[in-house]
Length: 293
Figure 1 (cartoon, rainbow, N blue to C red):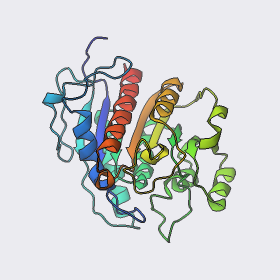
Figure 2 (spheres, helix red, strand yellow):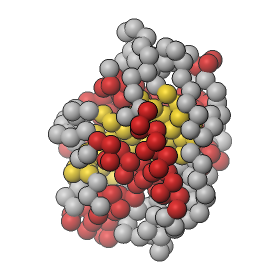
Figure 3 (spheres, rainbow, N blue to C red):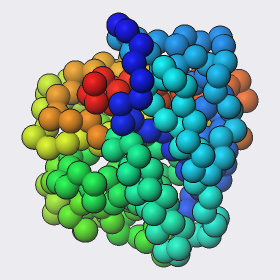
Figure 4 (cartoon, rainbow, N blue to C red):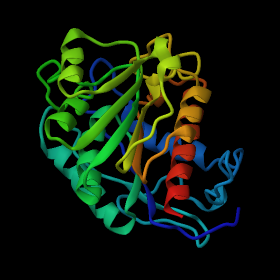
């Protein structure tokens, strides 16, 4: 495959974890993922032949809304958003949405690096404004559909409750779920969410979506054997290969956005989880680039 200049695809970091429960640390993930994405130890090409840029020319610490790209790199790095680390309030949610909206004016397709899963709500709001009706494919150990969690409507355990109640997506498919609750199951039933538990992956069909697609990957969808560096590890999860093969097989009119969230570098002593998160980010970014070509 030939190298090509950026085609409207962007990367943006959201180092925000104030809405995490139990353990924080996901705010450190964007810098850690970028480091491994662009490590000279890696390869400039995705598994399926998409050029992702010369690692030696990327800065590991991009700044807020500073566009960085190579002449022959197929995407722009918008840097990291800067938002107050304040839990349970609307201000950081609105600021994340505003920053992503600005990035989408430059690159209509966007990959966000979280941060905790709370960031998905404002990112999806911005993407839905840009693209209209969208679908979401969500890999996770948890449904993240609590109407509120410990009194926090913006908790990382609640983004899909906000997304569904605002009608931001027409179809939500969740894969890898293995730690739910009756309260969240009721939300799924009410909104006709398609849920595939980790123990029933053989039931997952070849997924085809009728509207532009957003893909949200919570790193704890993976079994802790592959990615122990998360705040809420849940045994019995997916393999890296299962996630990638599902991602490669999906069909949609357009891939317009996504995120990789909930990596906690503070709990990743060996660096294995960060390497996995970077792999997922690279392949998802490659899928966006392929679709934009």
